[in-house]
Image (cartoon, rainbow, N blue to C red; front, side, top):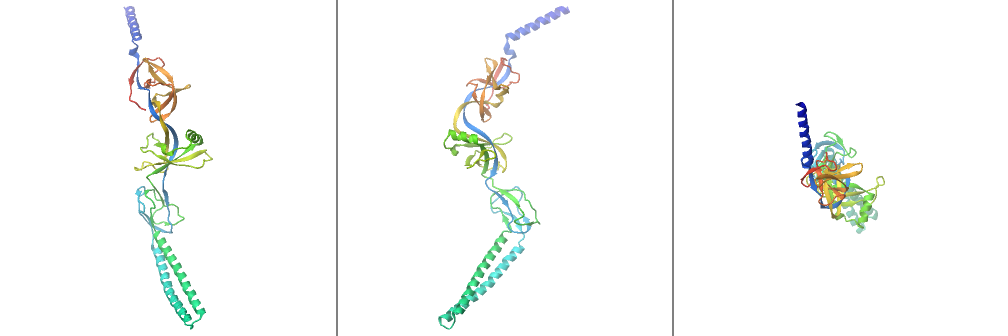
Length: 366
């Protein structure tokens, strides 16, 4: 009986195997595909850049005195002319008073010398005075006039120094942390008290290699900066929502790196860009060309290069491809694929050439 049962099981297994061979769709691997199609693609180059504020001001004290007030909150937006620091005013107010007193004294002296000069001239005209007396009166009057000029300059200087005790923001932007606290003596040698950086717009500077720069010159005798679109990508892979425009190309090459510095301007209404931030810069230029674009996830690499799987007649087949850079979230294919090829994007882990597949279309990702 046991031998008979074993024989029956063997026959059943053989029948199942024959049924599977006659019905390959039952063992087909489910895969997700996208149809290769051409899309407009612009030429794009990627660089590493750094965000720079258009205006960046180090706030310093222009007079020496005790710091008695800090009038801002670190990291807050700040308006041009807003108060930042207050320095003790007593000594500076006294200097203004002293200068005003010296001016009043010398104004009185000038009044006297003017009267004496007029009297000497009258006497000389009546031939009752001497030329020497008149000349001495003229010299005294001119000396008094010079003293007034000095006094006015001293008073102006004293008032300017008094005004420097109120430190205000020279630009609008955001203010950094304070480097000194109330009660300390500050002065021109103290160093920066804080930093204010402008916010909108922002610069992004990036170095371009001589090779890329020369290639751009070969394609166009005159580089049209207005036709170049600049896009930013952050370190987490997200893209900045505003496009930039190149506004400056340096006139000399950095000898240490053999690169040319290029700068673009970006709007920054939401303060999404931060001074000193490292970003990836994509520069797009030229007329858009029709190229095949497929999702990045479809690419597979081995020792021979890069390839993709396609669904060809219900089976997986390899296509060796040449890529030509990124386009959005996809990759541009120069050679190896034709329009209409069903490129396998999902389910490639277990595939081999000739493996039966069951293809399901996926939404376009490129």
